[in-house]
Every structure is written in C-alpha cells, then in structure tokens.
Length: 92
Image 1 (cartoon, rainbow, N blue to C red):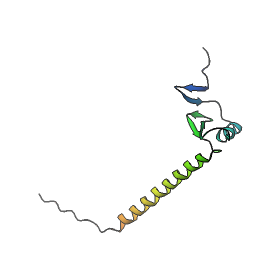
Image 2: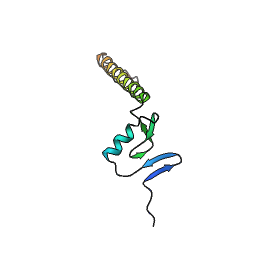
Image 3: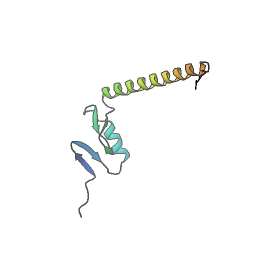
Image 4: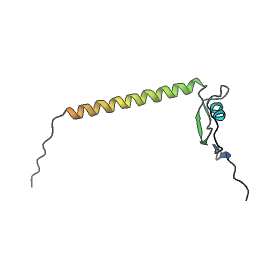
C-alpha cells in the first residue's frame, strides 16, 4: 500500500501534516516576498504572513474589536447588577 502524502493541496486548499520544526515555523510566518496569506506550517489552510504590513492591520483591528467586546460586556454586567429586583405577580 503506498504511503499517503503528508503535504499538498485538496480542492485548492493547502495542507501539511509533516512534523513541525522551529525553522519551518519561523520561515512560514515570516516571508517578506509573499502576500498577506501564506500556507500554514502545520495543518490545513492559510495563516497571516507577519512580514506583511496588512497582517498587522488585521491583528490590530481584531484586538480592537476584542477589547471593545470585553468593555461592553463588562459595562452591561455592571449595569444589570445595579438594578433593583423585579417582582412578578401571577394571577390564577
């Protein structure tokens, strides 16, 4: 029985299941001559190329949205706890 390939593409999506190494991880996340998305060093799909300035913009926007969500959740929880209890009357 032939060995299954550990890397390649499936329906245009890259995959790589070779054992990861530190050198391959660094070289795949930092590729100055490539675009914003590069093949993942391990797994299926694409990841951000940290040598591209657009990747840092995406990370900054994601961090800002995460921060905004945490702040709004904390504000909502604080306002909810300050309210008086509600009395419910049920007529039979």
